[in-house]
Image 1 (cartoon, rainbow, N blue to C red):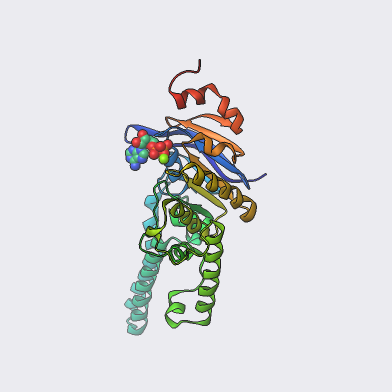
Image 2: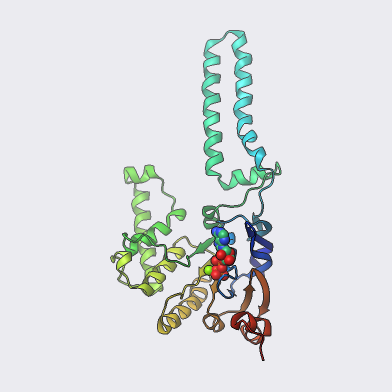
Length: 328
Ligand SMILES: Nc1ncnc2c1ncn2[C@@H]1O[C@H](COP(=O)(O)OP(=O)(O)O)[C@@H](O)[C@H]1O
Ligand SMILES: [Mg+2]
């Protein structure tokens, strides 16, 4: 089986605090794997590294076999690369100007400025082709969160982060943004392509709302939904970017046992119905036991155990981490 994600020796320091230490972690395609551990174990930090939010202090992460995240290498070289094409044009322009041809000189200046602007825009927007190109010069910069979304990663947050004043439907439509093909020009002119995409987006958003159990609630403003439904809406929004791997950070936090059981079933269906691979982060061990193929346990930033739910549950190190005392 291939791995969707491969994290090697990930370490993250915040000042003197080592939040994650030397953690290896793989996520096989089609699996539901869980990362558990007591509060402060480093779970969210690890999660945020995968999502491209924090750069790791050390280690690297491959996503679909491509190295996406690691410490920056030779980043200082990048601005020089941006300046190289306009600098060459400028030199050519200067050479032309000595010949006294004013038209050609003027054109040279215009092209130099356009190339400079093009370089800057490319350097700021960092399209994938650009990132691959600069790697040939030995320059590496970690993927940003939006790069990870484009590469196929969906996520929810430990604390709900919906657009509170937007409807459930609009929250899902925003999540679809990275997959849309129409440009703002299409939107402005209301081209057929724009209208077609708008329609299929709404159909898809409705499907996703139905899947997470919010059928017919698309018009409700997000903040007016009950708490458990807001968490489901977050999942629908994450699904809207059509991810291959879904990261869920304590999705059942604050839920009652009934809501928790429902959400756990939903996670199982995400795999069976959408073919998703899921990484579930939890501090409550009971949530992950029924649905995980594999459980990894973090404590004080260290990986202290990994195995099937049953193996992990019986592991004395895990019991100690959770109860704070060695097992009798
Ligand atoms: N941005 C940050 N700056 C400084 N310390 C942080 C930051 N984020 C997390 N930490 C610390 O790192 C440790 C792990 O936190 P976290 O990853 O949130 O744990 P968990 O999600 O397992 O509860 C904690 O001691 C926390 O205080
Ligand atoms: Mg956390």
